[in-house]
Length: 365
Ligand code: FAD
Image (cartoon, rainbow, N blue to C red; front, side):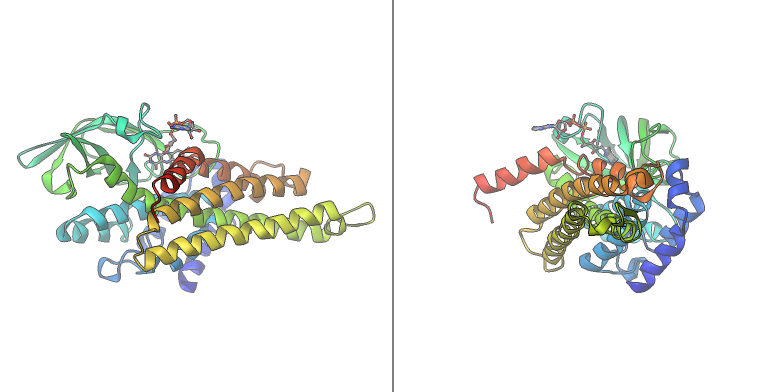
């Protein structure tokens, strides 16, 4: 993990701010991150991956989250793509697609549509098999990483159920249009994807076709929730570091900001927020690594807690740095914009609350 963290640090360097402002990471940097297995580090060595467990991958993700929210977003979607193939693909499909995701290519995961955000049962994208060919038609929105991707992992309806198909981004009928000026994670290549009568070989259809959408999507989202949660723990770490450093040196009213009690309280709250987020992430990752049945719920808890703490914590950091942090590309300003979006994705704060309340109501676990 230490080597992977060093490699990530080298790929980000001091360019996170510049990339955020430009809204782009150079394609070669993204490909290099993929080639080094950093974007989906839980993929096994037999498929070219680093074979990390969930905890170690989480720590790597938190490190990325502390450096560059956009690269961390690409890790989340690539990891989700890889996990979906791992979970639903056949041995041949795993052997075909996973080495591509650890070998320089990248993938976006496409669930959302303009009419199907929180409610994925409203998806209209149609996946239909005819002999050796699978036809895909629909329109996806806000697909993270799609602007860089050579593969798209597309969820859609399939008869009475749902299915997942791997679509090459350059297949005839695929059109990728960047989301203009996203509020945060600006260099994560969010794009809308049109799929007009796209045809792919039937072996691109992952097994499990026809299962309920909730079952297919929840498997992918569980990985995504954990990844986002760890990323938010990283955002909190960056905010804590910036705030601690600034309040030690900046003096007002004749003493360092950290010696003013109301400012010191912000430091304490940030330190606690980071710990709380980390503990929830560690617990959910332990559930993953030990294959425990409460994983799904604990991934929701981790994502819910960490994204809310990161949103509050980043706002606190901007408050404490004041004019020094009030520049668009500054780490705490990026944290403020990036963290808020983490409350929307992979099941919003409200959807997480509904899932957790449902869990309590039905007395599971
Ligand atoms: P809506 O579903 O319209 O919700 C609007 C508001 O209503 C929210 O606050 C929501 O919590 C609330 N709400 C909805 N239903 C209920 C309810 N039943 N009870 C209470 N409150 C409710 N999609 C992909 O497929 N792939 C990606 O890689 C991807 N990346 C993204 C990255 C970013 C930065 C963002 C912002 C979005 C991304 N999305 C992606 C889309 C994302 O999954 C959706 O934005 C998300 O599911 C919410 O859907 P929506 O925006 O349509 O909001």
